[in-house]
Every structure is written in C-alpha cells, then in structure tokens.
Length: 107
Image (tube, rainbow, N blue to C red; front, side):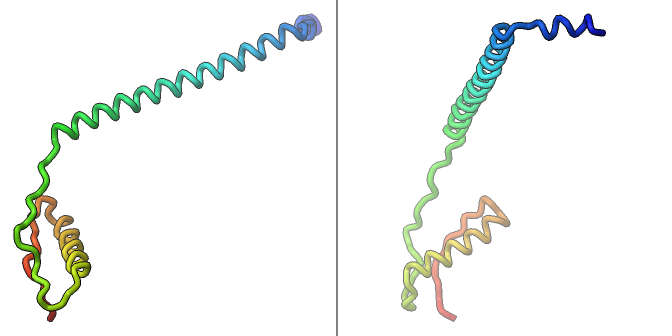
C-alpha cells in the first residue's frame, strides 16, 4: 500500500500549479463559449421573430369618424376609461371583436 502513495507525494509544486492554472483556464474558456453560443442563439431567435412579426403585421384599425358624444358633461378622460374597460371585457370573450363606443349617457 505504501508503494501506491509514494508517487503521489513526490509530485512537485510546479506541476501541480500548472494543472491548477490549466484547469482554471479550461473552465473559464468553456463558460465563455457557452455564453457566446447562448447569445448567438438569442440573436438568431430575435431576428426570426422580427421577420415573422413583419409578415403578420396587421394594419391599424380604422379610426371612427364619429367620437362618442359627451353632451351630458362627461369629461373625455371618463369616456376613454369607460371605452377601455368595455373593450378589455369584450376582447377576453372574442379577440376579433370590432367594438366601438357610439354614445355614453348618464343613467
């Protein structure tokens, strides 16, 4: 048993330092390569998504020629809030709903 461990304890410090530095450099270079590969994949995916968005780009919905009437003294901010809330509600039920607020009256 003593003969097996004799070669282990006879290793000089220079050789051990070389292996330590080599291992450290190897690990750092490996991590750097992984980071570069992942960044490259992210860049490619971003470009692919941009191309797909350009292909499926929808034209802006037409702006209605008549705005909701605010004859009852309702401020425009309240009209906008009500229209946004209603649109949000109906969009959950039917995403392709062409909902337009024509008139708001106090009840």
